[in-house]
Image (cartoon, rainbow, N blue to C red; front, side, top):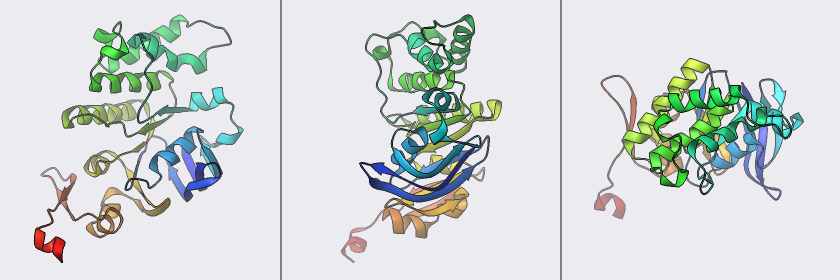
Length: 262
């Protein structure tokens, strides 16, 4: 569904990420991880067409630089880390924005568009909030509304930039479970950036570890999330543990004063 070949991206000609090559199969979940400033969000924006990029980015076997804005929006749904929520707009009207790529010039929403939005609101348990103003929602409710707008695009590739930002562990887990369920039910391909390495390990099929703008590791979670790699690129002391169900957990190990002095 997504193929990056020797991709570099940045701002005003200054690359933030460089030489990134990765394939993501249809229905897969790639989590982009790395320390702050590694270029995770920039890479996601490059796929979305929001920053200048070189190399080749292909979605569904089509080079994205050859796509019109409307074609790109039909293929790619993008949720930024800090979305701008319009003042005074209701949840339903906001989610309807996701149908814009499917509308003709000056066309109004059709019955089909309204049915798509109603279905998305139901799947995300937002029907009871449909008439509420966005500004009255809690953090978890806003994140679900943003996800609903993206899902209303019915794009095959979903880009999520830190979707759990500002959420407590329960709401973050619920949101990721929802994304995973939609992926399973609809065959949607997911590419996300995630700070929480445990969540990345438990939900993504494959991880891409960036550091200083380059790829330093790529593969299955167990192959990338090793104490050695995390110590080198995050400057973190961790243990990689397993739950009773075999899920990976990344646990920080406290540095004692004697260790810090040494």
